[in-house]
Every structure is written in C-alpha cells, then in structure tokens.
Image (cartoon, rainbow, N blue to C red; front, side, top):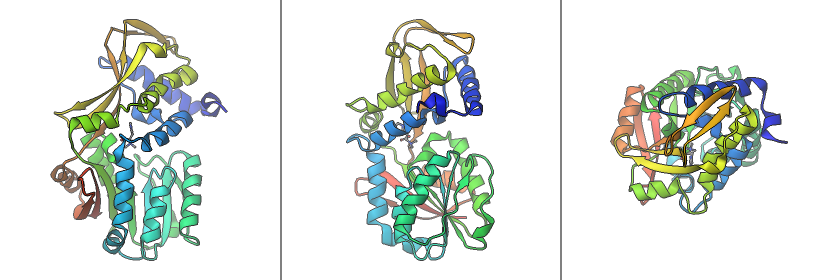
Length: 316
Ligand code: AVJ
C-alpha cells in the first residue's frame, strides 16, 4: 500500500501545515519527524547497517558487553518504559539482562511500531507483561495503572535525544522525570562529539542511503501534500556545525526554482537549503549539565573502547 493511502487525514493536514510554515520561513526547514513514513523507516533501518553509521552498532555493543554491569546498576524489579521503541531490538537486549523486570511499556505515536516491539520483547522475555501506550512522548502522557508501585526505568536509546534542540532536550528530560515518578531511573543513549570527517561520513554515506532517506521527504511531500518537487534538482548535504556541535542534514536546491504546495508557490534560490534534521553530539560534561538542569543525577555511564557513543544511567 502506498504511504498516501496509509496516511490518516489529520496527519496529512499536519504535514501540510508544517511544510507551509517551514518552507515559507526565511531559513527553510522541515521537522525531522516527517522523515519517518514507511519508506523512511525502511531507509533508516538500512542506515543502521551502513559501515559509516557507527551509532546503532556501537550502542548495541555497549548494551551487550556491559549487560551485567548495567543490570546491576539498574537493580531488580523495574518496569521499563521505552520512549520510541522502534523494532524493540534494544529493549529485548536490555530486558534479557535485567533482574526480574516488572513490565515493558513501549510508548509510541505509531501503533505499528508498538506491535513489533511487543512481539520481540515477548520472545526475549516470555511471560513479561507488555503494556503498550499509544502517545506522543514529547507531550505529557499517563502510564498504565496496572504498573502499580513498581519502580520505573525509562529507556531512551539511539541518541534520539540529539534530535532535540538543547532546550527541547531539557524539557523532554524534565517531563520524563515527572512521568516516570519518584525513585525512577533513566537509561539514555547519547552520541559523542568526534572528528567532523567521521560524523559527516556517518550522515552522508558512500552508497547514498542517507541521501535517499533525506530526499524521501520531498517524495513524501509530493505523495501526501500534492507538492510538485523536482527531486532531481535537490541534493543531500550533511554538515558539522562546530559552534552548535551538531550534524545538520540539508536538502540543497541545485538551481533556482519554484515549487507548488497546497496552493502556494515556494521559491528557491540556487544553493538555498531546506534544513531537515539536526543531530546534536554531546561531550560528557555537557550531557551531565543537561541532565542536571532537568533534575536528574548521574549515576554511571558506559562508553565503547573508542569513545564513540555513551549510555547513561540517571537517577530522579
Ligand atoms: C535515530 C534519529 C538518532 O540522528 O543519528 C540517521 C537519525 N538521520 N541518519 C540520528 C538519522 C540520519 C538518527 N536518529
């Protein structure tokens, strides 16, 4: 089935509203959440297997190699609440190592993801109660009553925290602390600052998969918002913004052109870009400050031997 047929009307309206707002702004932008339609999710999964894209495999290695140490630091009997579980592979890995977890609560706005995560975790940890919650985790939401008094462990892997602006990251961490409640812990994956060449290659791979992932946003606007982007007239670019310590993905207009979208004409100058995603990278001390401003205390952290990626355990 095509993405257009899948898309609920409300979501389509929200996409069009975001596109109009972002593309008529002085510096054109589109929110990165729209990268993840069915096609975008498949492309992202292909990205996680690329030789240049180290974050996924490095985080999985940390969760695997440090499983015993993480389980000991987390402690027994926790209900694991995951923000945006994806396919549930990391949760399955984490839960397999934990001491008598009380439940698994995957939280996502897309119910399809929840099913996949739930079934993977059910395989890894038969009999564990799985209590999915359909919610946008960037907004306040309630945990299932059935969790009772079990202490909570939030789980936010993948360096998804890096897609927030720093203020947004603090707001998210604050809200997560309130949602999870007193005595909660949070296991957080965060990508680290490193050589710009390594970062730029991770976000602009030789096979062009990341370029296809980025350009899919224009295909999506054509499919779902009735736009008429000439996709061949745009090119993907990944740049390290040293001042803000983030990788930015941009779609660059290769020539001056106009595009129609929802009854509006959008003009592009040659070389003008649409900023489609920021992926903030953290130095350990900066991440510690971020967590502290959101009311969390750092309990421990783990990194790989090359210091590429970090996993943090925070205490409420
Ligand atoms: C999974 C959203 C954290 O920022 O590294 C990968 C998304 N974008 N390649 C990241 C992404 C381009 C990824 N996140």
